[in-house]
Structure formats: C-alpha cells, structure tokens
Length: 129
Image 1 (cartoon, one colour):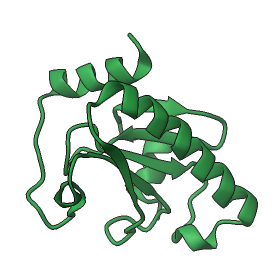
Image 2 (cartoon, one colour):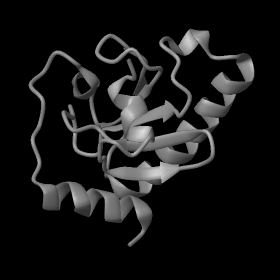
Image 3 (cartoon, one colour):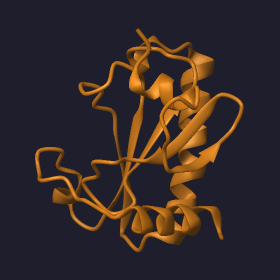
Image 4 (cartoon, rainbow, N blue to C red):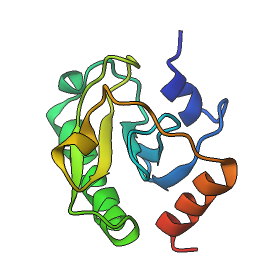
C-alpha cells in the first residue's frame, strides 16, 4: 500500500508544495513544530533514507539544501535545523525546521496549527509570489 507521501506525489492527496523537481518534492508539514517546517522527500517510495542509493541520497540532500537556502530568506531564524526521524511515515524524508534555539526542533512538543490562508501565505512566500 502506498504511503501518504507517495499519494501526495501522485496527486491523490493535496499538499502545500514549496519546491519540486523531477525526483523530489518539498511541502509544508501539516503538523509543524515551527512556522515554516518543511518536509523534503524523494518521489520514489523508499522506507529508510539509508536505503536510497548514494546518488539518490546526495541528490535529496542537495535538493534540501536549495529549499533550506530559500527558507532562510523567508522565515526569520538563526538556523534551519535538519532532522531525519522517519518513524511517522515509512517513506524517506528530511525535516527542515526554522529555529532560534535548540528546543525549536523538539519533536515531542505540541504541534502548531495554521489556517489554510496562513499555509498559503507561507507557500507564496517560499515561491516568491
């Protein structure tokens, strides 16, 4: 059965997409730990990030770097934190999280909620609209 991320890639489930290329997609996390929390995934369904080929792994990291650079311009913060947790969805993914202190990337804290309009504003900012 396809993961929720594979269903997003296939267009079966909508997302707040902020970047895409032939092999990757980046979208806002709908249960974010910080404003601007983005998930970066390979389009090919692979359970663990370490199961990607070396080429796929490097390509995913370079795509995440491009997204993070854009995030720095859009979301005021000291750093863009990166995490590979992978427990919630069995599809390789990287979390990119704007942060000002170490606690900002704590996945045990309460998740934030935004309106559709707020999510769309974040997308528009990331896309330069």
